[in-house]
Length: 279
Image (cartoon, rainbow, N blue to C red; front, side):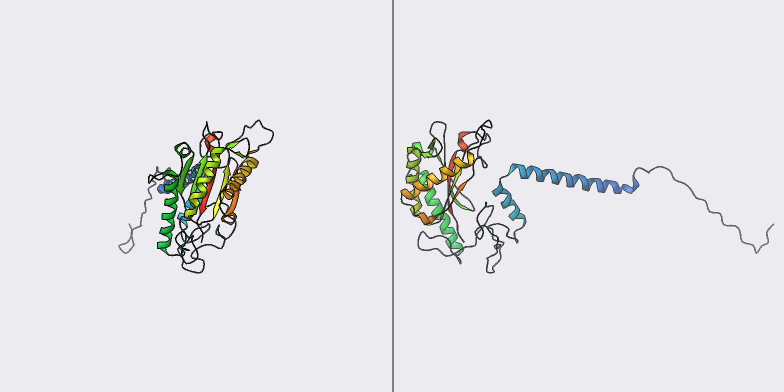
């Protein structure tokens, strides 16, 4: 027997626990959830890119970067550029607009356009002028300048770019004979627009759009046709009294911006006239 002064041996028992190898503490679940969330965001982004136009995408981009102006958009600053980027679309040639606001400026007379330093009241005044032009064309106040048979060819809307007036084909009444010969219908519309344009002095843009041509054609004429039609309508406007200097650009869009889901639908044959906002 050990002596009374000897210590008893220390016995350590180690118990092996089996099971639970598949869980690894649950960390894999967090990583998997992050992966699924990222994939969902990716596919939503892909869908959004496919379901929106270039202008809408630029507007969405500016919404999420309100302090960085990457288009014709005010970032809210009060510096020399008023929050606008030096690459804003009014600084460089315009390639599209998704902007949501403009820096106000002072009006020149009753029907002036925006100039540097315009106030919020002047901006509201311009909106009222745009509305007056719309009312004159669409007869919303009971004073339409357009006959009933012409109204079905007109759509107006106020956007961040300005007042957009759209003239379009219907199945029984085209705007052009052949490629770019204006019909009497389009001549009447040009006359009405020229009279309505006297309400404002904003610069004007003319855009030509066509429906898609059959794929069996050896050469797609959409670009040439839309360009010729835009130029023909510009000539109609100047003939009816619109100053040449007011027309800042004439653009050919071919069939790249259809308004009908069927690219060959005649509704895509249209002329868009934009009374542009200016800095």
